[in-house]
Length: 118
Image (tube, rainbow, N blue to C red; front, side, top):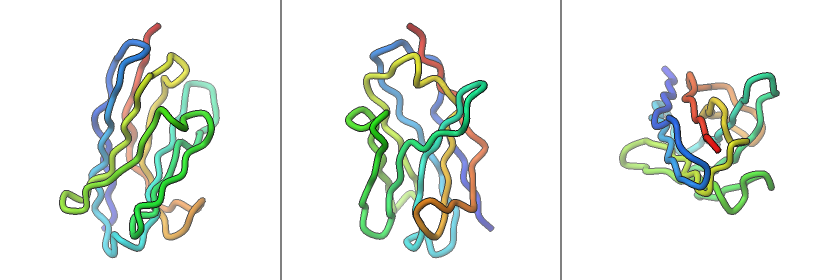
């Protein structure tokens, strides 16, 4: 059974940092690509970044590059999203996702809300 559970969201002020966590329960964990997405009210879901778990390679879109960092803890089976220098436009529900290949995610968490006040 696959399960992804996010935590760590909340209300922060612009310029502050937040670390989101995703507890990952997947068989053959190392074969997966793990990603973070976000969705703001009234907007489409947006890709925030991914990590190829087996090699630790990451990729970020320009909108978050240099401010967001994805990393994992294999021993704890956890995925993290470190978000620094937060902006009000980063306000969204953040989701972690898993799939067998980049761009194709079959499993999703329930999401955690991050609100950045100006």
